[in-house]
Length: 290
Image 1: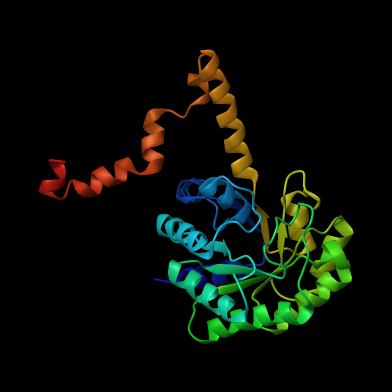
Image 2: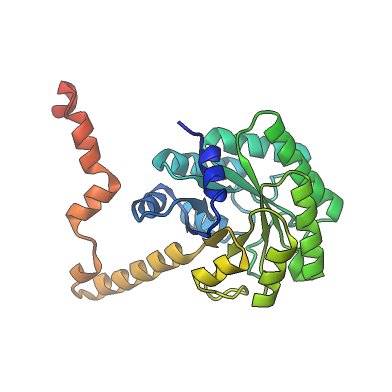
């Protein structure tokens, strides 16, 4: 069986755009897989909100993120890209982070150049470290790969915000030289900037589409024509789920009928995996008595 990293390499070898809804837990990842998408990303923003009920401002620890990654990777067969933030410390921490995510089953890990504690890429107050520190992070990540971690490196720069697009592209180009497999220039503000990123940088590029964020929400065909290999949608599922939950809670509180808002109980059980469990457990006499 191919490894998660090999599955992702095979996808990236295709000359097409891969639309990537982002998950926040094992259930949302399963729904993405059931819908027929070929890969997913554990959004740091969404995972922080889901796991600890707090904003994505560097509050989740490495151990918490790693545990969330492991649970998601165990639940799906499609490649999972995971958010490694700034690597949780210096270059040696980055090496440990990359190796840990590989062991947890992630196909790729994102390492970025923000100052710790990091911030969501489409919120105020973010800053990046100096070039050499940023380069050391990607150098260390690639060294972890060379030491045996079977994982791809998704290198992210947030330099566009403070230093302009030229600096961001310069950093990303160096990341590629240092061994990054996928490049991610966060928060370009125009279609022209997105086009420049794809034209000037080598290898697979990722676009990050936050509804209401700074990057234009282009149709899939246009993103593909620009040259992006991956289009990530980090908050689409969480925003949809939260809106539905708030609506249903309002109806429940006021005593209104809510059945039209709910998934059928049979489909709910099927999607979670009850039927698969019963089918497998039927082979064992003791399980039938549970």
